[in-house]
Amino acid sequence: MSVRNFTPPILVLLLAASSAFAMSSEPRDTPPPPSQPGAPGMSGPGVTPGNPRQEAEQSYALAYEEVAKARKDIEDGKVKNAEKKFRRALERCEKAVAYDERYHEAWNLLGYTARKTGDYDKAFKAYDRCLSIKPDYAPAREYLGEAWLDKGDAKKARDQMVWLERLGATEELKTLKARYDAWTAAHPDSAAAPAAAPARPDSAASSTGSAGH
Image (cartoon, rainbow, N blue to C red; front, side):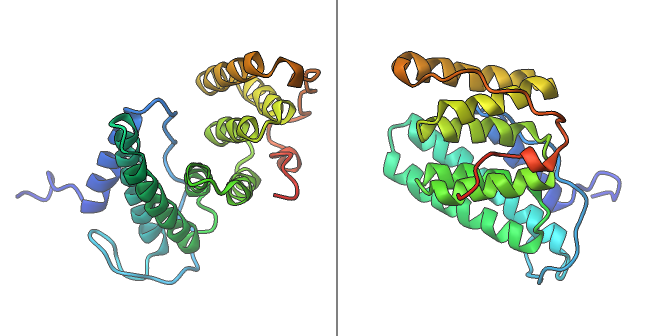
């Protein structure tokens, strides 16, 4: 095998996981942010021991794989199997953010998997953390809006729609609006007045509106 044609194992893992997840109806995450120092190391395929960013990315990629498998189980009617895989994905995400606490994509996926396992307190905290790092991260804003709909708070879901519109995140806005429209059609008495737009899309202070979670 030539050096030029060699693909590092961690890159293969990341690409495979991303491809599997992209086939779902959920929006795909963007590439991870730059490396951050300060976490303990562990060994694994394609990972340099003591390199926290590589270890975080590996855990994140494995979490993606588990999510893709869980969604396939749901399609096949294997709900119990899916729950186990979502729990494993959640554990992988928790490892990823332990290695790199600034890994906003991993915080977002942690929120998603926490929702899927029914832990909304953990989910809201994860979205808060993700958006405190990157307030304009559209996938987290969409997922946060969906989480608020799950909890019956249309106003806070609409807050995230306003953010997505201001950010120009058309795909995420379309997905969340479809969920919002379906929810309000089923709960016509719960619709509230439209929320005011945030002053600036890059303001961390307006990240989630989920204080106390």
